[in-house]
Length: 535
Ligand code: GLN
Image (cartoon, rainbow, N blue to C red; front, side, top):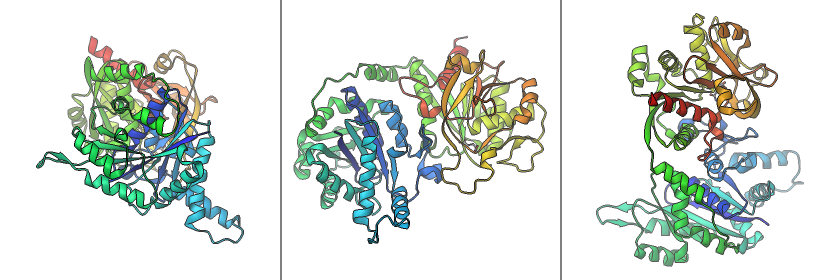
């Protein structure tokens, strides 16, 4: 039987609830429990696939092609698991199901209402997640801040669910902020007390508080929160700002959080095996070298827009005991080769990540040209591969004005074009080539040297693809097609042999990297940098 942990947030948004949830997942797994995790987002979009990365950050893609909240990326990385569509629920998807049922007449003439129909659908999503792989514990994180209108149906559904599932089988953890007032030198507890009061007014008494703080929580503050929030002192846990998110599980464990959770849920307190995680954190905190990697994209004002790419670079750094500094470069600021050179002069490696639309493309092409001509280790991801192909076509294969039809419908050389099956699709939601597909790897290539396998599986999210009409020409000029779909028709990886590391892929390897197991392509990039620096 599955036990449930419900995580809500209070006082402010962007508290790092996702990291707390993911860290708890890691801690419970380390005690031998089978854990799954689910995110509930209160917005009306059916999924974040149609939302701008500027607003919402990265869209994380699961194996099954679900376009999900970026917190699922944290969950997968911390727990080392694969999640799916069922693990990301939005108000939009809940309403859609209920309205579709109503249209089909499934409610038999009843008035369809928030309670019981919307709340019922939310509860059934919880049950569906607990049926997938039968976890011992399901962690459910509710997006937004307590008091928001949007999240009310979720909170009400949890209240009902806890009653129905039996209170000993679930717990509520409220994550809040303790603001620090420098003038009085104090962490202020009042906003958190109020937030707990709001949660109680909805019928939920939390069993645990996790407090985001800049400073150490004093005994006095802990006592106050315990007393006014009716939470045992041992379950008032602080979560101070850490230099690395991967330190959070150990920091929480040191305060006895897992013990308290297992006690609350009436689960046996098994021994923790966290040695490998401790080794990881040791490595993170004791780097032996430092590299600068330029991340050249369109959404550089919001770092969350490329969070999985950034984490993947860090993972590869951990393996090589290297601290990776990310130099954020907005591609639209680069208008000439000189500007590219100037902006990239400190870059030990260059990454051009995925993206959509024309803005900043010419800048990306200049950056790729610089990487190719100066043998700077380069990794192109999705749009980054398409740009690498365009750059190579224009500047090496002399196909003047070669382009993707996404950016120029009238280009004389459509080296990247809309995929055949995309041509008749009208809508925008969940209509791309999405999710995990097999890819065949050519022997004696850079890709093969890191994957060490003929067949791999990688996650996709794109509409355009390399146009095979140009394959032979580009091959003659020295572009290697090292990965294709098993039927050979879709180009998945390209590389340039004579460069130390110039590899670009149509898929998104960043979704499968793990802190203790960096993705081969990111590992290859960092390894190439290590080797260049050794000389
Ligand atoms: N815009 C490109 C396409 O749709 C690339 C997508 C991406 O980078 N995820 O094919």
